[in-house]
Length: 148
Image (cartoon, rainbow, N blue to C red; front, top):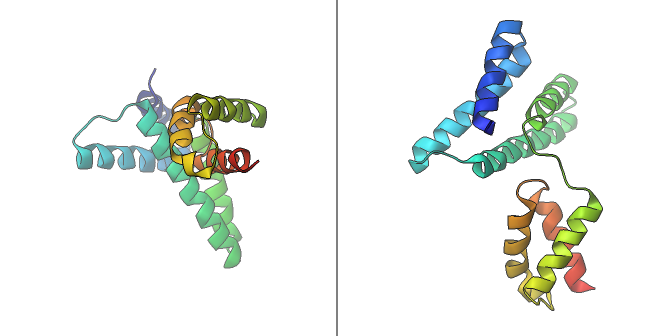
């Protein structure tokens, strides 16, 4: 079952069970998916939906930081709960060792020797990671391994 179908099923379940948080969170994500599909005039595939989910999670983490700065514990709790709902739809995350192995293989595949080859390494690594690790983590690891 693709992720959009899972999201729609989750929305139906939330409506039936009266789970307002899950209903609202999934509804926001489905609206973002629909908006992206309308803007690009395409039907998003799973990888694009995963990227959108990761973007939504990132936005909520930024909102948590801002809410903490403003001493708004209610908003912190709400955003943390929404992140938990969204993470259910993401594929299982890679461990640090698995990510390191993927990046090491990507570096050897493109014969990278310095940070100037980072773009080529990132392209190969991101294709292999396929949404199972944040881009920032992949980028930091690529830099670390290319600098050493």
